[in-house]
Length: 169
Ligand SMILES: NC(=O)c1ccc[n+]([C@@H]2O[C@H](COP(=O)([O-])OP(=O)(O)OC[C@H]3O[C@@H](n4cnc5c(N)ncnc54)[C@H](OP(=O)(O)O)[C@@H]3O)[C@@H](O)[C@H]2O)c1
View: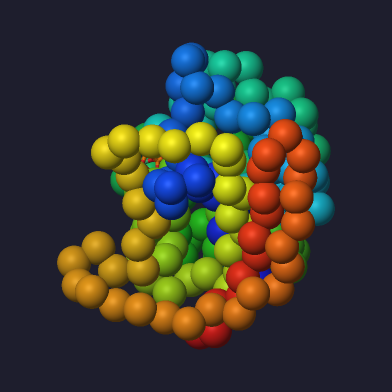
């Protein structure tokens, strides 16, 4: 199964955070909806899922399989709850999906990257700068580096640039 990690970065390279005062751009949201529709699914961390639900974000995803990763959460109506990144992939594979879209947040993205479970990354670079923030890391404890292959680079409008890279594993 092909895994695609989708994330918004800030122009100074942070893993972008959003909230009531700094909502995601409409270009990034539209792109996420399109990527989720194309994959037919997305995998999301329990905290990001709760934030999406709180802002009424479930509507456009009625046709999409949503897998929530949590060590503790029990059943959540309308979605599948799993205990690990690998279990999320197994679950989607068993449902016949060819591609899994990994939608965040930081903990989930870093878990998938750290476990070497990502084939492709889509980074939407938003025209915003942040102070101290979050980072995407292939290893949380050690310095590591990995070359990746640029597959595509295009503007999405509204000052957002999309970068797409392949990761060999
Ligand atoms: N830049 C972007 O594209 C983007 C996208 C989405 C969110 N965000 C930002 O990311 C932040 C939220 O991220 P977050 O890191 O706090 O939360 P998160 O990744 O959405 O969810 C974290 C939770 O996921 C579960 N989890 C994480 N790793 C796991 C693992 N290996 N196995 C099992 N369960 C695991 C745990 O749930 P339990 O506690 O239930 O065990 C954990 O508390 C916000 O600031 C949001 O704005 C950014």
